Image (cartoon, rainbow, N blue to C red; front, side, top):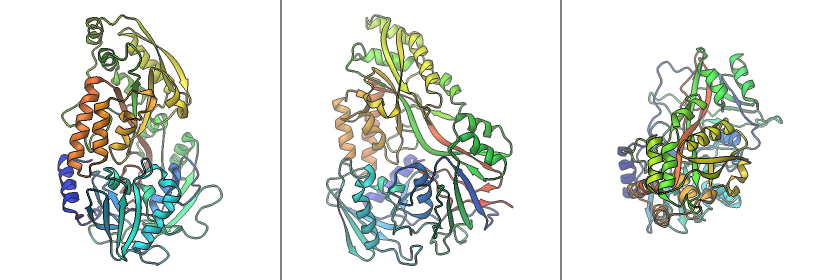
Length: 501
């Protein structure tokens, strides 16, 4: 996670315009080489293009391709990847990257600036899958020389470096990448199973100097039903089962032969409040709602497999305020007094929209909605429930909405859609907050950005503009043979995984 010291290091890194040396992967005690890791995944791999946005494809391409900038899976800090250094100029609108020496694609060709430009030209044709196109961020990507590439932006864009670390922004040359595993001819079967082999020319090594990856190969096999994925793992037909919902994850947790895997790739479950509708336009009403929600009771619905949300971004994120341990304390009596003192007549009747389909954020959406409604009823707010297709939640036009927000690699990925000028779910933007978020978007210095986001979080808590509930992470399970797994944000790499005999 991004600790304050790490934030200071990253700020110095950007201001000094020099990336630190890439950290060697720790050498695990007794790491074994060889073997094929068999993984049950939730859906078919449909393509090997990193700009394809579906989760199985991103998981697959993460093994084949790499990005210019990486996120340390343990600390969460940004660091060098295929780029060994970078420089920031022209008030944050020009980024120049020096490419790492000695890196080759799986087809044997050398990584150079032309390959980087070609890869981003391909991404531009696909509108960058929203990473750099909302708003349009990249004006030009240009070759400076064989080892140097420059990105010219339309304006300073604070999330730019973090977005370069997203799996979709990986550098690809057709189906050839620079990652730990390579896709040979026929690697992608008609049923969506993907078989990858070890890249013998991979450039990374562990701390002892041993080449990575340890494995000979990977097999990603689609098993759509979650119970079947867990059954395949228990039967020994796979070594790992990913994306297990709460029921299956809880079952795996109780099995001593299995290890539970958590990928810190959170989805935020939060309660949106339309502050244009009386009496929810009153701060007292919104704060009473926040004080009424019993997060401990909700945690039971999630089988304890979630983290309580004190802010809209999780701990370790740029701009997270370490001094805040909870959004509001649970205090039904105080919430009732708050409404009474503000002369807000109760009962207040309203509507609560919730997703009709189970998701990582809402594994049992109706039960979660019922729990929230029961909590609100204790303070005199009567919420009628309405199930809504998740894709239509933004247009539900309900005063209260149970929303889902994927926590990306940059805080802007959360703050902007939830609290920015075009906030989702009909939430009326607060002008001061919108202004702070615009400033943070246009600021490259992470220390300054962090302070701006802390101001936003403070206003959000004071005004109860949105009530964060829990962070739900992707959960999987593995057999006792699997070692070296690190659940990184957005998608894991299996380059450091090894199999015990």
